[in-house]
Length: 228
Image (cartoon, rainbow, N blue to C red; front, side, top):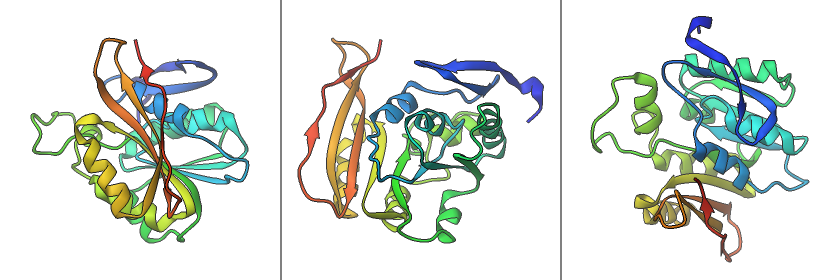
């Protein structure tokens, strides 16, 4: 990506130890990605994490501050993945974070099964049939499932996660029951949920959810996350 299309380095909100590049004319980091990164619970036994649709690499950058494990971010858009790689290099995290410019479906075909402890994703929320598609290719692919269906994530997670590995997602509440059904269909036991509100008097528009592959039953709903 040409330098004139990238704005100067900026802080990730709440994390002043790392910096991030962002395109000046399209894709930006979102509060949902930050909420997802904060929601992930890490164990001392975790070694490998996969971020599906990593975008600018916000989630791997934030998670890198929390332990000594390896994080792979897979991003289909070449320009966006290049920006993510720039941020990884600036923060000198090349030994901990790998950014892969590839369709996650192709990546998973050639990836060994049962190798990841955690898979995270802030996937496209909307169907291509839901309203107006953005004329910007990057934004259209980020917001609508033009290249990745929600169920694809569960198929990939079932293959790539270790037994008891966790799939952690953020999604919109209008598809809450669809997401829960997919967790159950692919034999993930839901362990934690948290609803995200835009204010104390606002209904939740999105939610965070963690499921364990072939895990035992037993879930908890965390206190609501209020974003102002």
